[in-house]
Length: 341
Image (tube, rainbow, N blue to C red):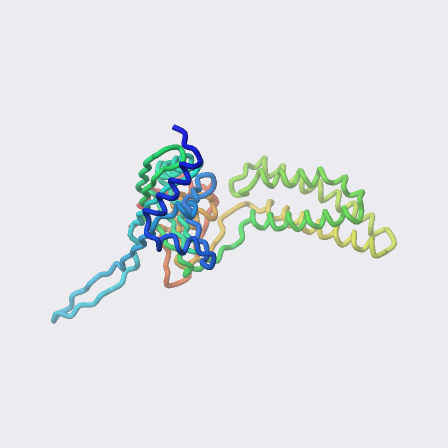
């Protein structure tokens, strides 16, 4: 059944008239910061427009405690840590994207994986445990969502991540490309190297992440880098034989910089990709797995490498953890873990 645009407007008006006025005052006020609500990541991410936000996000938590009874009736209470309650929220999806987004929500539920839930500066890592959809028509769908909170990140935690080989190579590539563009602007003959540089970019994209790259792919990238290094080195040697002028000096400086970047990437690729270490304070293994493997469900790889049985880390002191490559032997022999103790 199709609904004319006027029907959509009427649906918006009904939603506004049936909701408490205070719910939308802050959202509509130009003086108030706009908080976007979203759940999921990448292709499965669902963002809720202002009028689609739930009337409230009921965020509750309890402090888990142990009570010890002492002789004489004295009792001592030992805090064991905060435990967030499930979050339940309800609202309405509008416009022509209502049905596709509703189906994305069901796909998040079906996957059963840890995903980010964000509302402005507040973020949680959650697993969706309930998703009810009531379709009114193709432009309107009612949703009710419940999520189990794995980690609450309200900005009080800090994590120091050692840069990965991939991030180092990305930085070196950006520097090299910028220098090459500048060199072309002062010496048009170097545009002949464009294909060689493009081959490097394509090769680096193929082997990212380096930890999971096949040996043949690594060798292809190394060969592309070595070919380009030979070309630039020959060019630099020829420049040094020419009398020094401001332009020649600039060309030489840029070509040497390019060589430095190429050699840096080569050095990174010729190292055997292995485990790296991170320093964390309260950051869960779900978050670390998402950062390093792109999949929170691979937290068990990190747990196995560090002799841990839960995804939690200490909030009291900095902990150093080993992050093995996703393709390492430990990744294929991880035991079965329980998500929460």
